[in-house]
Amino acid sequence: MASLSHFDDQGASRMVDTSNKEETQRLARASAIVRMEESTAELIRNKELSKGDVLEVARLAGIQAAKKTWDLIPLCHPLAITGVKLDFSFFEKNLLRITAVVKVFGRTGVEMEALTAVSVAALTVYDMCKSVDKVMTITEIRLDEKTGGKSGSFVRQ
Image (cartoon, rainbow, N blue to C red):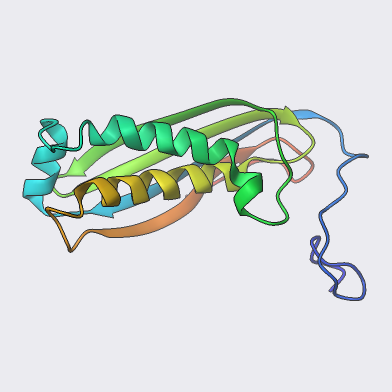
């Protein structure tokens, strides 16, 4: 089990000690897809849902989630995040792509923060639209890119 950084040699869980790591600029980009009825997408685009502007509420939820990731995922470090940006695009009539970019200057990456941001933003879209669309599906939550740190860069092909 020594090859898994969140376990010690005896298999006990631990938070990784980052005190000897070099601080670097780090970035992570993640995305998620929300599949919905075309009529729901139109309501969102036209800001016609009675609960308000779905995408702006989802954006705030995603930003808040990124900042609170360490509270949700047991072995994540609390980080002084330097930036969080969420974008939304309908790339088909019924498919919404949510993208988050999270940045930090620190000793550990922000992949979990970006993944948490898109997950919570997608759940917020679901919550705000569930009264009009029971068949929404959240899919393809994934890391698309990361930079910085000892392991270097990653870009999903």
